[in-house]
Structures are given as C-alpha cells and as structure tokens.
Amino acid sequence: MKCADGSYARGTVHEARTILVVSATHRDHREIRRLFPSGIDFRFHDYASTCLEELITGNEREGDRAEDPHIEVGRILAGLDGTKVAAVVSTDDYPGAALAAIIAQELGLPGPDPRAVLIAQHKYLSRLKQVEAVPEAVPPFFLIDTAEGAELPEERCFPLFVKPVKSFFSVGAEKVASRAELVALLPRWRNCDEFFLPLERMLERYVGGGIGSERLIAEGVLEGVQVTVEGYAFGGRATVMGVVDSIMFPGTIAFSRFDYPSRLPEDVQARMADIAAKAMEALGFDNGLFNIEMMYDARSNRVSIIEINPRMASQFADLYEKVDGTSSYRILLDIAEGREPRFTRREGRHPFASSCVLRTFEDKIVARLPGEEELTHLEALHPDIRVELHGQVGQKLSDELQDGHSYRYGIVNLGGHDLADVLAKFEAVNAMLGIVLIPAEASERPSGAELAVAAG
Image (cartoon, rainbow, N blue to C red):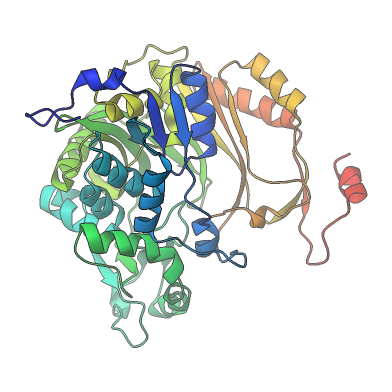
C-alpha cells in the first residue's frame, strides 16, 4: 500500500505473506524454497501454455501460441480469488518481467513502472533512452524493417551486429558481414508474429506504439571484455551489487563461464556503475532489479552498453551469496515487499565464484545423465554447489532451447579460493557427473539398449 509520500508502508508487509511469482522458472522454485523454507505462501504462476522459446527457435509444436498478455493478467488476478498478495515478483525475461510489473501496479504493490520495463526490453527504444543519459556508452544503432522491399543499410555500413528488438538467451543475435547476409536473415523474422505478440500488445497499451515489421536492430560491432553489471533501484536510487565477467569460448560469442568478482580495474567498474545508474534513471526504472551487459575496450578505454535487462540475472544469484553473503533473491523479495534492501559485501564463504557452462559445438544425443544419488554426493562434497542439467536421455541437445550456434547442456556454479581453485573443482565435478553424449545421426534415435551401451 502506498503512503501519501509515494513510499510503501512497512506495516502492510506483515498483513499478508502470499507472494506471486510470475512466469516461474526452475531456478525460482529451487532458490526461493531454499532461502524461504517456511512462513510465506508462494504462488508460482506459469504463463498459460505459452511456448515462446519454441516459437522463436522454430521448434514449435502444434497448438503453440502466445496468449494475449492482457487476457493473461485478467486470468491471474481472477485466479487470486480474493487472496491478499504481499508482493509480485518475476525473474523471467519475457514476458514475465513486464507481466509482474503490470500485476503489481494493478494491485497497488511495489514494482517498476510497466512503461519503464517495456522500453528497457525493446532494444531500440532502450537505446534512445541511453543516448539521452550516457551517449558516450552507446554504439551506433538503427532499426531494420523486415518487410519486403524495405530500405536496408548500405554495404559500407557492414559489419554489423544484428539482433531482434526482443529476444532472450542470445537467440537471433549475430554478427552480419554483408548486406547479402542480412537479406538472408529477414524471412525468419517476418514470420515471428506469435513470438512478438505479447510485447506488441503491452507496448500498445503502456507505451503508445507497437513493433510492426521493424523487428531487428543493427548496431556497431563492439570489442573488448564483456561483463554483466547487476543492481537494484529503490527509492529512486540505483545501487550496483556487482560486476560479473563473461568468459567466452575462444573465437566465439558462446559463454564458457561467468566469474565473480570481476577482474576489471576498480576505476572501470566504478565508471560502469555510474553509467548503469544514469541509464536506469533515464528509463524511469525503480523498485526492481536490473542487469546490464557492458563491454570494456582497453585500447580505447571505452565502456559501452550492450543491452539492458529490467530483471535480476537469476543464474548469478548464488554467486553473490557465495562471495558477498547475500543472494539477489533476497534483494528481490525485499524490494517487492517495500523494504529497503541490505546487500552485504564480501561476507560470503568464498572469495571467488563461477558459473561454468557445459557446452558443445556439435549437436549430440544425451546417452547418460547423473542420477539423484550422484547429485546428492556432489552436494555433500560441495555444500553450496548448484547443478542444472538441460537435456533428456535419448533426446538431441537441439531439442532444448539453444542459441543457434552451440549446444548448452548444463550449468555448474561453484565457489573457491580463486579461479584456479574453482576450475579444478569444476573439472572434478564434470568427471563425477558422468554425462555421456553421442553423435547425433540423421537416422532414427537410438534405442534404450543402444543408449545403455553408449553410456558404458
């Protein structure tokens, strides 16, 4: 409940302890139940039968469709059936972040302005706001209309980095070397009406415009060290929690791991924090978490914004807990319930932590995954380990959501004394997982007996 001065009354926090988690992810279920085992009634909501991931990757099944978000909001509110809700949260990128903001506004609860969330998520509109606040951190950019016959950049403008104005998991983001390569990409994005539908509907209502056929953004190619700057906005002030280094597989834009704390110089990190605060203020973003991907080019000493995400980076939540002693999930719930968050620094069990990605650059069939006993044993050896496995025995890795250039099949988060310690632990954990992948043939999938033989 808002006070006359625009703040949220603390007393209302204790009147209801039902918290709605919109577009809940597997990480939400795992981390929230671990951090808050009792005392709160969490209502985990899924976005109807929407399969946006499949719609954008081309793996959609018959019947997949994107529900109108306004209908979904009405359905969610009706489903509460009079239950008093203390907070509305989401860690989901699309459409969860915007849906949660809309629902919080409808219920008079703390949350970012839906308009700010939507502008931040639309990569072109976000760039326009960034130019107002931090022009020195914005590369050249322009919209690309995917309609047939629309004007395209001249050859002299290439190479460019092209991506959809809304995406997730780096799907559709790629370096384009020529006009011909760009032309070849356009048909795919002309036929993505269903994927863009939720954003289109929400933009129309809360921003006053839609996407139409202007579905791609082209930007100048950035070089340097990539990081994620993550923080929160509360009471009109943005605070940065940390800077996480993004480590790529050599010669690719595929993530190998994420290291925290960053090894960038402190003065560079301070500049990044200042840029982040100015950008989020320009967007009018408050009462929520954000993460901003940035690039630092040491040769030019330039910091550039890659993109802004008006949500927390849930993959890093336990990295902060390991190093700083505070999970970003705690910050998320504090803000959502109107409490000023307290983020501790360097009070965790480890000086260093990494989120290591299990990835291959060839499609494979999963022949073996570890069982519960093996995972329990790993957790006994490393009490704060997080293991996520993306794949099913007998299925191709391409059956899961992938970035279009490689095949991720797991994530392992570990803490340690330093990078060398974490990498040694990761190598041992990877061996103990015993994951077996076999070549993906064009013929029929292997039988159970064949998988057993392949798995040894």
